[in-house]
Length: 490
Image (cartoon, rainbow, N blue to C red):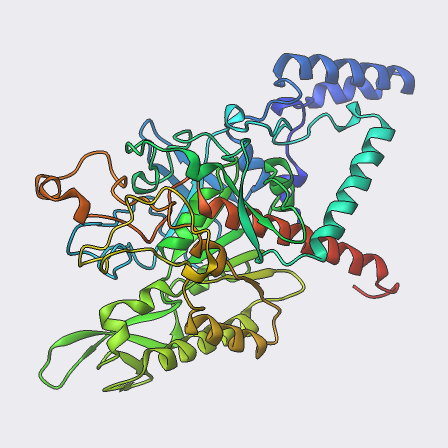
C-alpha cells in the first residue's frame, strides 16, 4: 500500500544529490563513483540525521504519509486526514466537552460532539515506556547479529502461536509493577476528564493491573511494531465516547482517527403535524460520517451505551425507518435493526481482503447507590471485583450483536470486553474528572461522578493490548495465506 510520498521520501535527513553532482559522477570510473557516493552519503547522514534510535515528533507523517499535521503553540492540534476520492475531507475537531453535572448523563446525547472526526498525534515519549526499552522504530536493523534476529523471529512465532490458541476474554486482572503502559500526564491530548491522577486521585494501584487471559499472556503493546503494522494505513475508531476513551489510550507516536457516531446509525429530525420539529433515529441509515471511513484498513466499531438512556429506552415516537416513525418500539428490536443496517453497510463497503474489522463490546458502568442522575457513585472503589457472583448479567444487546455478526458475510472480530470491564469498578474517574469544580458542583461534589468512562492510564489500555494481539494474529494469517496462494492468483 505504498504511496508516492513513501516511494520518494528523500534519504539522509532530506538531503538530495544535485544534477551537477550526477553529471560529475558520470565522468569518473565506476569504482570512483561508488566510493564518492558512499562517502557523500555517509557525510551528509552524519551531518543531518538524528541518532540511530531517535524518532522525531513528526514520525507519523512518515508512518502515515497521507495525514498532514499543523501544530500551534496551544494544546489544540489541527489535522486533516485524506479521505477517499471525491469525498470531502472530515471536519477535524479535537475539542470534547462532556458535561458531567448532577443533571447530566456522562453518556448523554446532549453531551458529546456528534458526527465529527478527530485525529491525534501524540508526542514522542521515550521516558514513559518504563520496562519497554525497545525504540519506537527500529532504524538500525543491520546492527543485530543474524543469530539474534533468528532468535527474535523464533520467539515471535512462538508468541503468535500461543495467541492463536487463546481466548483473550476469559481471565483475571493481575498486578504488574511494570504498568502502566505510559506515565500518567505525559500525553496532553488525553481529555482532562480521563486524567484522574492529574485531577487529584490519591491512589495508584488501579493502573498497575494487567488483564491476564487464562490460556496465554497478552504481549505488552509495542509501539514500534504497531507503527509498522499501520504504516501507510488508516486505523479508525467509530462509535461513542467510550471508543474515544480507547482511541486516546493509543499513546504512542501514531495518528489514528475517531468518528463520533454513538448509535452507528443516523440521527435525524422530522416535523410533526403541528409543525414542531423533533429528533428521531433512522434505523435504516448509517451515520452521516460513514462515507469518510470507507477504505480504512482497520476499523474498530462500538455502540451500546447510548441505547440505555431515557429517550432511547422508552422508544416512543423516536425510532424511524424510511418515512415511518414508530409510536412505540422495543429498544432491543430497534438495536437489532440498527446493527443489521450496520452489518449490511460493512458487507457492502468493506473489502475483507484489504481491511480488518473489529467490534468492541459493551463497556459496563458501576454506579452504586443510584443511577447517574440520582446519586450514583463509585468514588470509594479502589479495588476490582474479586467475587464473580457480583458481576452483572451478560447484556442482552451483546447477544443481539453476536447474532448479527454470525449473519454477516464479512468476518468481524468481536472484542468481547464486557466481562473483563465488569470487574473494574475501581477504575472510573468518579469525582476525579476535572481539576476545578464550578460553584454549583462544589456544593455537592459527590453527586457529580463519572462511573461510565475510564481513567487513563487504565482499562482501555487493555482493550488496545487485545486489539494489538488480534492484529498480530490476523496479519500473520494473511501472510500465511499469501505464501500458500498458487502462482497466477493475485
